Image (cartoon, rainbow, N blue to C red; front, side, top):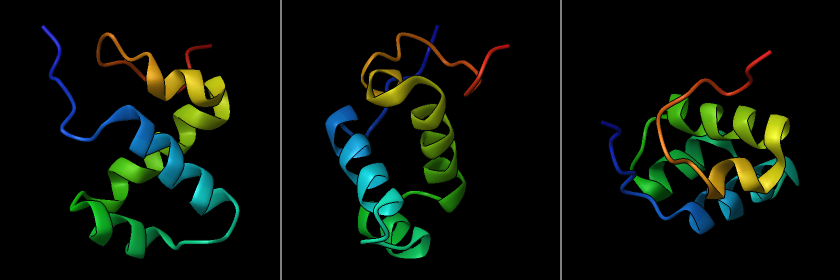
Length: 67
């Protein structure tokens, strides 16, 4: 059984897009949301592999990229 995320997927996408655009730093984003930097790094990896849909559709815990 997967754990439900406490952060709304739409917020995740917005934060990742702000980070990738250089509008927000990793530490600033983690403090803003109250999550670990490692979580945001994971979201960035998922976003890069699967575009925004990867963060919006997360039915279960899985690796960022499955090759």
